[in-house]
Amino acid sequence: MLDKYKVLLWDFDGVIMDSNPVRTYGFEEILKEYPAEQVKELIAYHQQNGGLPRYDKFRYFFEKIRGEKVTDEEIMRLAARFSEIMLARLLDSSLLIPDSVAFIKENYKKFIMHIVSGSDQIELRKICAHLSLTPYFVSIVGSPVLKPRLVQQILKAYNYNKYEVAFIGDSVNDYDAAVENGVDFYGYNNKRLLNLSKLYIKKLM
Image (tube, rainbow, N blue to C red):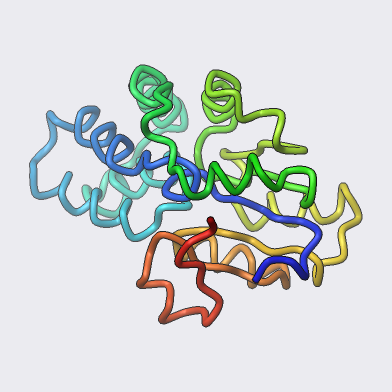
């Protein structure tokens, strides 16, 4: 299925690591002093927009759900606390998704591979280094830069032919980033994506 490509772009959360439940916990923990219904609305938004940076989600919570202004400084404070919680819980190899990780380790010499994530870039690189994933990827990039822009930057920096590139992701945001940059998108680990793309991976190995 993927043999016709030279370059694979991988989302991280839900594709390489089963980290989405931990991400959900992080938002619930940080916002626990706010009304439960408002937090529940934010969690629904978070789960529907897995590829969006946490900065955008916190801003959505205050400006759209609560209808109040929030400063950049407050957003950064919340994001820093979120990152602390993530690093305390995600440096755990048991959360890695065996199917995708096995494929990556077996095929990293066959394909050129990058991680393109909505997670914080510094945090993401720490997790990958701790779990010995870094050597398999040419680059590991994340937020605060939005995913469509990250894909664009990779295509330009490495002068890739977009027809030889595939993006593997589990969210609508991943699909949007691929389509915006003219690269093929393969849904993975989220059957709802079959409504968007006929290209879907049930199992890699």
